[in-house]
Amino acid sequence: MNTTDNSPIEDMESTVTVSVEVGLSVRGTANQMSSPSRYVIRNSEILGGEPIITGTRTSVRAIVSLWRLGIMPEEILNHLPHLTLAQVFDALSFYQDEQAEINNYIERNQVPDELVHSSVKSALGKP
Image (cartoon, rainbow, N blue to C red; front, side):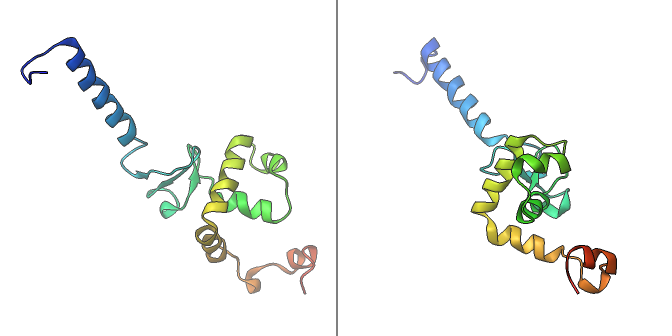
């Protein structure tokens, strides 16, 4: 095909190429970093870029912490009713792929034992 030929097919191919490139490159705002997850994103302006559920300030860490306490994913919705079950499962799936990172966030956000009230410690069975 001649490079100066402006046939509809050539124009359509260019349009398709541009649409695909834009569709793949635009994901969220300038402050969001892309994620392979459907519901989990990182936004440098929310929790310092810690993975969160899209459209919320709920961290993957919060969901995983509840799950690690033995709370079933369906029951996590009772604690975080603004989420959907799909978001909870996606966060747990994200955790399976990024365990070291999320465990680091969990560790860094632990309340030191000396700051935990004695009634809370006794409810948890801690001395």
